[in-house]
Image (cartoon, rainbow, N blue to C red):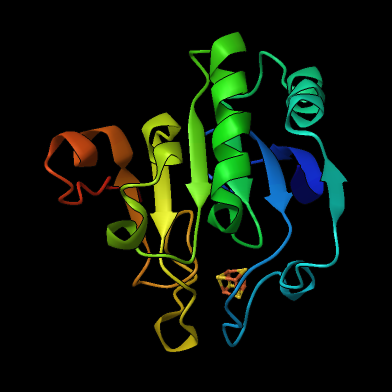
Length: 164
Ligand code: SF4
């Protein structure tokens, strides 16, 4: 089962291009200034079997979408369910570009099986003192936009993507 809170079809702030975005429920952190505090409790949200969730996402993806983004909450709190969802998605749509937002640092999660199915990871908790509204696709300057396949090939050393 995966626990999600919602899906939006036309975001341009959660990754490159127009993206389908799903918000997974639950986060272990309580960052001051959290952009989505309603998504922190684990007990809220909608529980759905992974295969039904994938069907729902596939129904909503259109040719206008550059890809799909998993935000939250923290999607990697449900790393096993996320792996199942991504594996099913990749089987149906191998070309889909996948971004994931997480409060973990890449170094903490790089060995998770789900990482092999993610194109871009935006990592790190939101830090209010480092908030910068001028940053593309993230809220605070500690967060990195990471090319996951290149980073994994690079022995697990982060390869950041430059995006203005
Ligand atoms: S990691 Fe994200 S969702 Fe979790 S508390 Fe921090 S800002 Fe909120």
